[in-house]
Length: 173
Ligand SMILES: CC(C)(COP(=O)(O)OP(=O)(O)OC[C@H]1O[C@@H](n2cnc3c(N)ncnc32)[C@H](O)[C@@H]1OP(=O)(O)O)[C@@H](O)C(=O)NCCC(=O)NCCS
Image 1: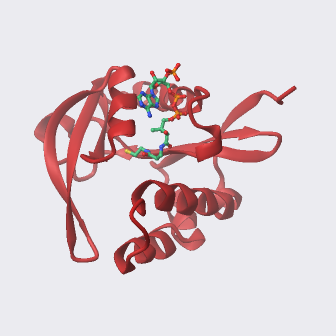
Image 2: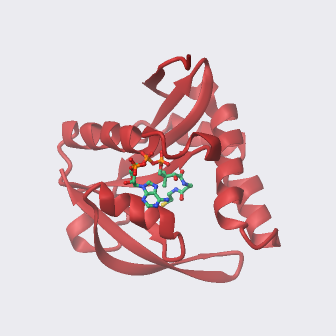
Image 3: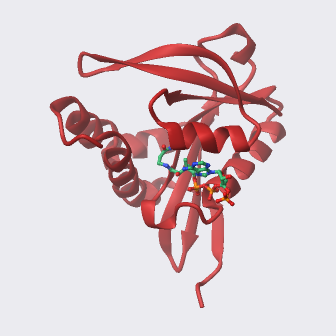
């Protein structure tokens, strides 16, 4: 029988495992046609343990972990909207990342992490939780729509000299 899932807020010591899982899920999701320098750079730099250690040290940013048998299965990362792309999102919190390892997907972990993130957002007096998702990430867009998120706009995400169309989604708290 599988051990139950447990949820907790991450501390500095969790940076290594978060980095490992984030790198794996990022490449699994976005390097779906093979590897390119911009993807490899994003994975190895932006998702490096020291970068997560820095994020974890920020007082307003929260990373929520889902674990089973002491193994990380997924995480959600939220922060106050510092540079919101739309005026209506300024008083909200941003869901920066929601990553569940492939073998653990479709077991309710993403939904549970998102609900925890929404509770925290509400507790902090924010008006909404919003996120930006790659327009080609059809599974994620389908997931968010089942969780009550509505498309509120578009924006372009640039890295490595390439531009990616993203959709902005939001849910009132
Ligand atoms: C998107 C993601 C977070 C969803 O997490 P998950 O744990 O797999 O999703 P859940 O099991 O909680 O799904 C809850 C419901 O959402 C919907 N859903 C989830 N994945 C779906 C998909 N691929 N297609 C359509 N609906 C989906 C379903 O209604 C599902 O309920 P069901 O399984 O009973 O039908 C996860 O697939 C993931 O980490 N993907 C890779 C990284 C990523 O794209 N993150 C988001 C970036 S913006």
